[in-house]
Image (tube, rainbow, N blue to C red; front, top):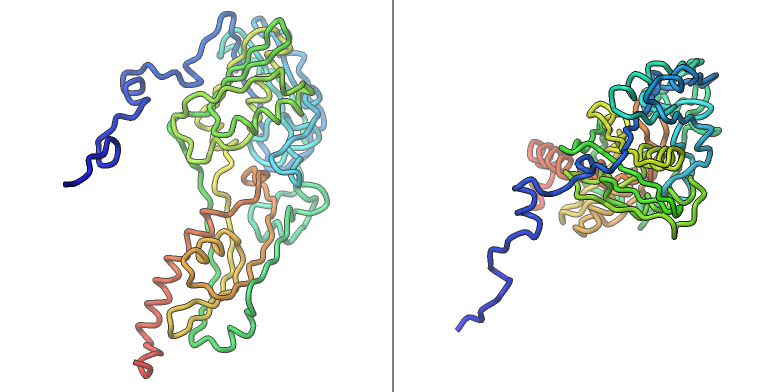
Length: 367
């Protein structure tokens, strides 16, 4: 007699299903607190430029505006990894991509906040920009960050790749370019901040990693983490696109502290494209050797790809190496992970190689 299970093989209702289908779930943008203000962020129209001057006087005089912030109000840099503590909530000396945040306002409604942004006068000096990986590596003009566009260089090796290539019975070389994409969740990023009279800060945010945000708030605002609470609201989609620290979260918190009132910032769909930390572009040069026993002997850049293939136990030797570079089109300043970009190619490469081998059939004599 088959054993009866209470969970396995049963149709179970998701705990949050009824609330979502009935519209009861509260997402970040659904939240509304008494006396709440609305924040907006002014963003760079240039991919790479020096910020010479930011004049906020006209915006401050507009009726309904309660606070205006610039980079001088949030000077502490942040990041996820210790190697990448180079992000600014609001750009100070220069902007590095179209959409880089420069200033922010808090007003009694969204329309006044939008009008206030139009009154902020920013003077720029355009700088040469790198619009591709090749241009970034060529290093012509002022680097996007620091003294070099190369954020991190990695070189690894397992096995004797050179010896393995010499005995390979078929070798294929490819240059693969991944254009990059955005996660594009249905819900735009949003955050609501409240600073209480007891000096405690609460942030509700559509985040997948509230612990990252918690840590960054403590650093950027110079506040004890014990006085900061971060609540991750239900996500209307994320797919990894809400797993970083975003400037609007830090800005909303600072505006709440300055005004003493709750502040909500909801990104527009256009801003989501500017601010996203999506699957950034990747250029991979790959050389793969194959043997008759279906194993691959490879040397290629991209440790994400290496990890995916090693799990299948078909790659015997490898030499992954590459540079994580900064260039102007997108904010590539997060942790340099290449999980999906690199993993997208093995199946396609396998198909291409199989097609080439079937056409040539180099192993026919061995059958």
